[in-house]
Length: 213
Image (cartoon, rainbow, N blue to C red; front, side, top):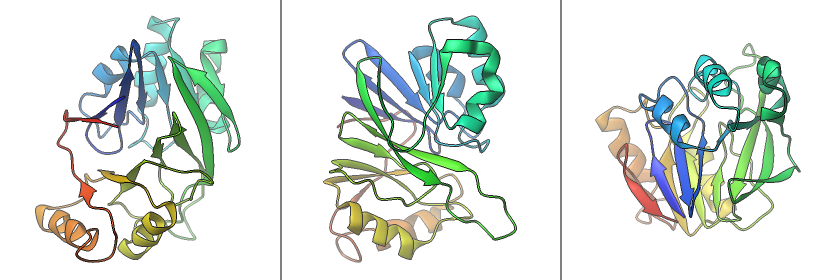
């Protein structure tokens, strides 16, 4: 399975003739191209940096074969698409485009008590790659490759370290990085390394770069 890193929280996964994309949001310049190349879109939650609602609405209208999965409150906004969209919640499991997807998580990490919480689901894909969305929920499963959010108003290095230690992945790949300056990126890599607080090194992929997982 090939993982293709896009800007911010968006990744594509390719296996055989199947291709899915997770979290094509407005911070991702090539989100439209990523969606056009995929048979299915998986969305972790409703925030604009994780989903471009207009892009998905247009894609659903243009492509009757496209399938979209996400929390109920989000996919209800595309109710006119009928069977093309599916609401998912923690505990669900489905197959799409040749991938096995298990749903975990529950709620978005707390930003502030005055910011309303939204549903957030994590996707464990083929039992190997876990995209947590915007939360540090630990899935009750073995994870080979963990996609780790490293910047944003809800993130904290200490919580990220504890999350990585609890999941204990074999490989760690950075996502949700767009709010980091070069100095901030260097600091994140320093803390999230075997020389500091975790046992597995942080893999940093440039936009468009691929990795076999």
